[in-house]
Image 1 (cartoon, rainbow, N blue to C red):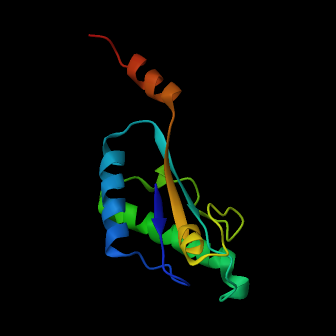
Image 2: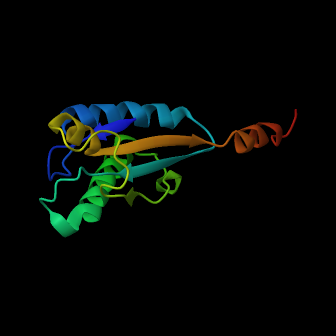
Image 3: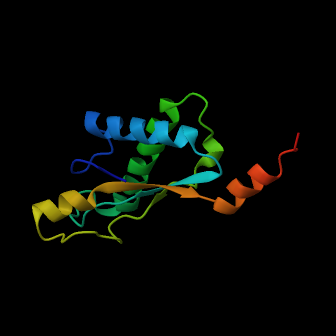
Length: 126
């Protein structure tokens, strides 16, 4: 899942908050998982030296939103949020549409099927 941001902003839109609420609801019912959060920026140099900082701020905003969505949500489920700046573009940075797609945070639920199966088989049998 990708959450997009406005230029030079780490503020979540109402639509992004709804997306993250839906994601958190799905995560609540999963077992044996971690959540990876990776922030990105476009290549426009408006905040010059702050690109990794801005992408990290975006990642932190996403983590905070997910964490607030579910009171019981475990912070330990998160892989340390990272800000990758402009290093991993998914679209052409020479167009406004491409830059818009690159201003994003990617959120992934990483399931550990081995742990999930192990937790099911390690339960005491009646």
